[in-house]
Every structure is written in C-alpha cells, then in structure tokens.
Length: 150
Image (cartoon, rainbow, N blue to C red; front, side, top):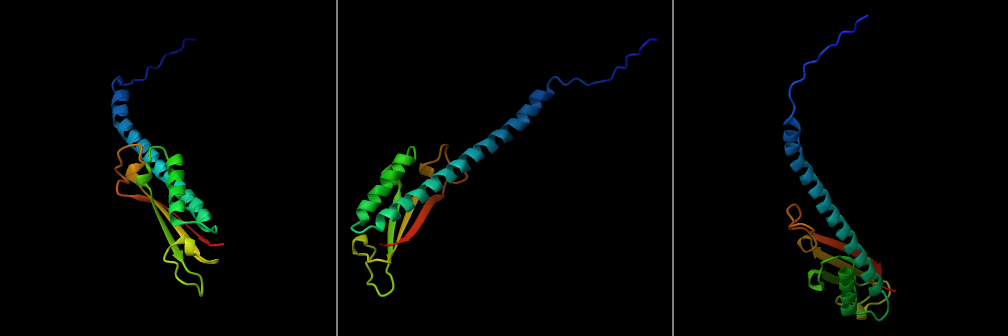
C-alpha cells in the first residue's frame, strides 16, 4: 500500500519574528523598567518607616535630644540606602503632650512619661531612583512612627 504525502501550504515567515520582536520588546522593557522603579520606591519607603521606628525608639528614652535623634536617623538612612546623602533626608520631631502636661515645644529633652513622640522621615524619590524618575519624579517617600515617652 502506498502512502500519500499531503503538503500543507505555509506562507513565508522569515521576517515575522523580527517584526514581532520589534513590536513586543519596547513594551516588555517599559514594563520591566516600571517594575524596577516601583520596587525601588517600595524598598526605600520601607526603609524610611524603619528609620522612623528607630528614631522613635531613641526619642522615647530619658535624656534623648532632638539633634541626637535626627543625626542617628540620618546616619541610619545613609547606611541603608545606597547613594543617599544626609542632606537628602528630612527628619521631623513632633511631641504631643500627655493629658495634664505642659507643652514641651517639640523638644525631646523636656518630655514627660506618656507624651507622644512622633518621628517623620522624608526622602524625595528623585534622590534615590535607579533611573531618571518619570512616574514618581515629584514623589516624597515618607515613614512615620509614634510612641509614648517612657
């Protein structure tokens, strides 16, 4: 018995792969770039929260001062975030007096037990971006922590 070969007509596809790659590759690279940029923003955002928590723990201890806490937080940020300078980090200390306490005017050295110590750490995203920022160029990454003074 003789077998018959069936030929299927297939059009030429020599340049199709090149054209498809040229169309898909820019989209893929933009998505990859966006993932990296937003990932960096999330990482540094978590590090600012960690620095604020570190500063709040230092601020609630007896004998702490604003300048010491601010300096410690800035040094932590410089040590953990690659490519950042101490001048790029803004640290705010806010003290809310407890019930019946005098206002310490945001001075940690004048706080009493149960006063609220709030540390806010801010970094402009443009200072920590891997690439020249487009999506988040005007964004500020911020971490906040509040604790009662001991």
